[in-house]
Length: 488
RNA sequence: GGCCCCAUCGUCCAGCGGUUAGGACACAGCCCUUUCAAGGCUGCGACACGGGUUCGAGUCCCGUUGGGGUCACCA
Image 1 (cartoon, rainbow, N blue to C red):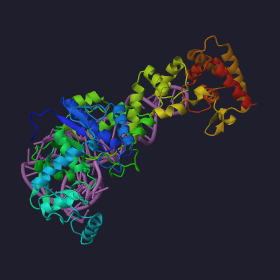
Image 2 (image 1 turned 30 degrees about the horizontal axis):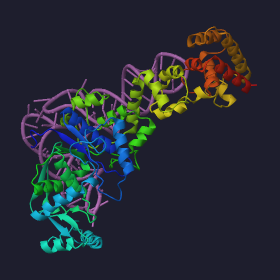
Image 3 (image 1 turned 45 degrees about the vertical axis):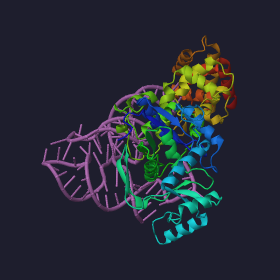
């Protein structure tokens, strides 16, 4: 359709407002996969044309989030490139220069309508159930006169003169041709009264100047695409290929939103989702591997990438599946890596010996889905937890199996066995305890649970003897004594 | 409401005219088992509806319904 020989160049163009959005990562992922698959380049452009809402903090958060995810761009504000500046607020002269061309060719016109008038027009249209849009009031103004007024400093915007008749069609990579009647397209503002361009103008000008060959963005942009197409036409520029990705959805199928879903990438990072897992999950939203694999790396997605494998239906964002996937990635980590991660993320007390972390790692990895669960899941490794004495008494279906006297007696036996155990190892402890069961009325199940409570303070824990091995003999005996004390 | 997009299990995907409609998450049961996990096995569960086209439609076309997006000097 176009760009036969042009090297592939794609971009994401987030606006730096609020927290870095999961949708940005989603679109970035697909752009990056396509670019890398074709040996093209992936660009980050900051669309900060909304002076009121854009902030530098938000911009920095976008950089950080993208880098955290490993969605590294080849060009961007913080990494440079040959097509800069990559921040629209630094390209204002370019937009003014370009929009002047449109003014000269009659494709755009000055508009002096006040916000009040526009509101009135809109209200009237709404009441009459008319088409909503600018009524063309200033379109017929004398060109020279309008230019004079503008030059004299009268507040104004510049609008696109959309043809009143005919239709505009563009090709979407995933959806085929999409047609709009020109009569339904508004005379969009191109340059705002503050001298800043609107998204529409800046986006088209920059995509052209930056050599963007494929505009892959979210589905919500489809309705503004004909305006962009008209702009390319007015400028006499070559059209890019358009690719509109489906929108991520809330459970109720509305566009994913902060109120109904966590949308901040910072949140995912804080919760302890691994970048690889989040990327994999996002890839699952709308994409599938040729062999049906659900767990795959970014590189594997890049290698297999094809628009043919992208779905158009809007996927519901399912945190439960992300949790499962994150668990898969956590379990797949080498124990050394997980241990290092626990320390680096301060999920464990500072100064914890590597040997301890390494011993714990396999037990913990298997039991958490998010890294943020680690501190609670390992609490009893660092301190003796409080618990009611009754937790120590084994019961079956609510009926007591051993009373406090029996339980205390067996714990004292256990303590003396453990004190004399030649080796403080899982194997030694387990065989000693099973032997004790053979000689007493205690079933392993009951004894082990009582010991589990004594050692960890919880009915749910990492494997008993492995845990006690990590705790060490001294600490374990101390906790046994505490338990015995509670039954006195 | 106008315009535009979309439509296979509850959810995410496979299917690109001929399939007992497959997999994953979740859920349920069983197994393993010192708890919880993890793992294994089994089960539950879908082509929105109506017309065409065709020897034959989940697959192609049209309509209906449903869902979504968009109608700003926000992107």
